[in-house]
Length: 433
Ligand SMILES: *Cc1c(COP(=O)(O)O)cnc(C)c1O
Image (tube, rainbow, N blue to C red; front, top):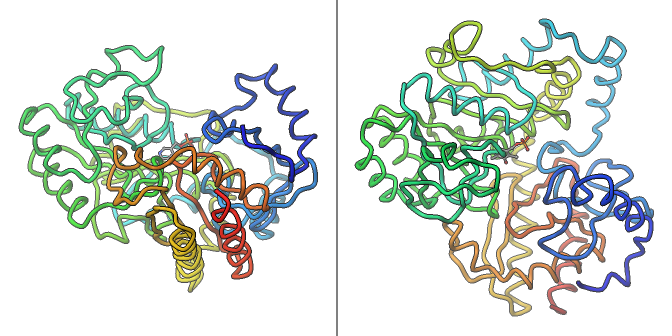
């Protein structure tokens, strides 16, 4: 464990110690526990704009943004004001509410492939449902996923990352029956030939392929030119569906998501994170003929007690309204480019092999010369060095995702001054690791 001497975190440590007796690993989602970087997690007290304050009173510039939703900055006054108004009318109806139409219209207008949408409560739920829908629509059972892509924790999607072109997926977690993943085929990201081989071996049994159009869950890995286009062609050729999991990239890479940015239109799309504006929301949507299979319009069952609740819809609506204003994505791109280019330059000047990049408000850096095109490449990154970097940045008041296999996120609240402070911290830290 790296020393935490310069950062006073006694209250965080006390609370986390108590949490470990109450919840598995002391957290309600694993990566929060700092396992991969060592040291103790920071317990937050409040968030605002680009900043976090922990329970010991330390302030940090935040590049996690609650894992994506905080793209307008934490606790944006317009989002909070709208939520307070909505709150006074009640938190959940379990019946239709007009706000569902508003957010649905906004999503349909924004995301090129989406003609109809169903709201759920998380990205996991959206991905789980979309797999069922792919299978229901095509009447085929097999799906293709890519090593290092994360689509939530549903059984059939928890297949060993990095297992390459497997005919039988191996479950990633105990408790996932082999039968649940037997129809999950995996390919390396950015490897069209591997996908082609899978289709040739299973020409009539693949329902479709699901992927992150820009990977954020094994670090930041953009698609190589032609990869998304090639997948679109291959899926079409074999009568299979293409699903872009835009839970992370939706409304972050561009207002219309990665599919707008790259001009590749999938059959179905999953969304989450940003569209909930910090409240629990997920969604899946796509072609009307496919979405019409979802109950009660069609026979594919999927439901949710709290789905489409007015609070969640309100946070989503207000967040999208802010994002739709002119110049937002130019601002996000500019600020993130400054950060990303600065980090790479500093790594070079301080003698560290590194590679990385950004698109819009999503960025990443690996401690390896690269290039990183897939999960296997990402694993060559120096994890021990990343841990030292992470701890050093934390001590300088910079909060990065506690894993090198996570993308970083900026927001409209990050200022030039924040980026300059971050780069100054990075220079100090990289000089000493
Ligand atoms: C976060 C994420 C999910 C899962 O979403 P949850 O809301 O955490 O369940 C699914 N897919 C991608 C691409 C994600 O980044």
